Length: 66
Image (cartoon, rainbow, N blue to C red; front, side, top):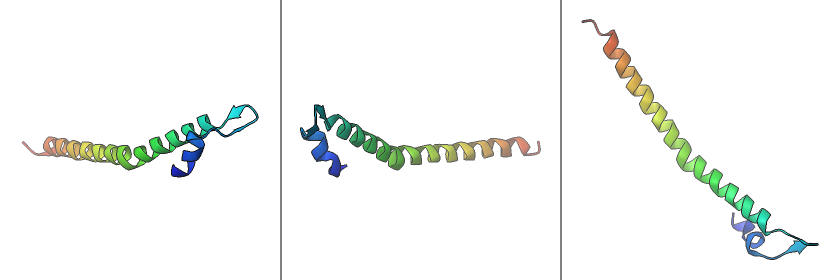
């Protein structure tokens, strides 16, 4: 992400098309995917693991003889 910083804040252009919108979009995508992979995905896995444990407890209670 730091490598794209000069492109995102600079004013370089070829012809009449500037490059800063592309630099900002790529940086935003990299930040979003990094946060998703490091924070959101482990939280989702933990939630499914808790759901599985809860479901197994319910099934175990149902299968107990009366």
